[in-house]
Image (cartoon, rainbow, N blue to C red; front, side, top):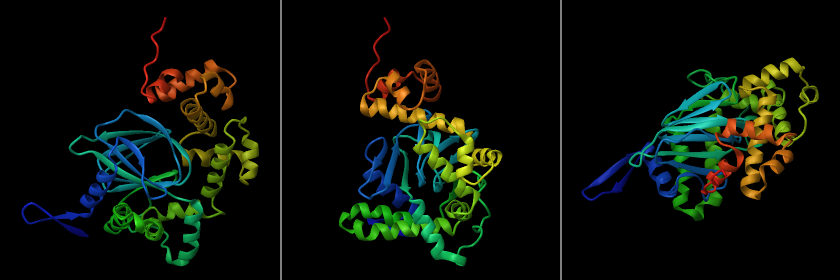
Length: 318
């Protein structure tokens, strides 16, 4: 698909990638992640390579249009380049870093929050029409909660139809749900379809692990009880541990720790809690232990890290 726009002399024809870069660049005017006028859609812009940042991915589809980004999940590192996209099937704490970006050629991307029930409903509607694997075989990270694939022209077109609605806001309430549905449909019938369908199938092991992750997310401040989690997921403890590590590239304990630290960071940043208070709130018994683990994950002690996020300077030590 191409589009023709007026130029100073004649016309300029844009391909799909250029069209996507244009619309994201137009509406993502600030550095970092920005909410768009379309519910569940964020735009991302970065004008220079970034340091490694820690965040929690929600179930979503993330698209790279320009630039390159690496994501570290446990002991696994995934690199995704222009015109690739990533599916996060469950909540996952990751380390992410933009490695290719400049003011002239910024990193540009978009993410679409996905409701697992929305995926499950479409899987049921597809029925036997959905192929067991995409045309190029299974995703190389097939056992992982993150999976990557290239964007073919049909997926690029579907994403453009969604993002171009930012230029006609009155159309968003009616047309955005249709464009969202097409994007999820393209994912399900593409390379990542088999992986997405596993997480949507209630009787699959992947779905059981997603329920365990949801339980850990909802009760991160409570002591970790593997036996109870295994019983709730109808799995043995050893199977749960092995399958959990395949999906998240970390143990349940490591996963819980990262969730606690992310929530403590949020509490200090948005609610103004002191580090010790935040540490107790998320389940730590020792503030000093909390501070050591916080520094290891975020690269700075709690107060210094939060001050930096707020654009403030930490006080000089006495």
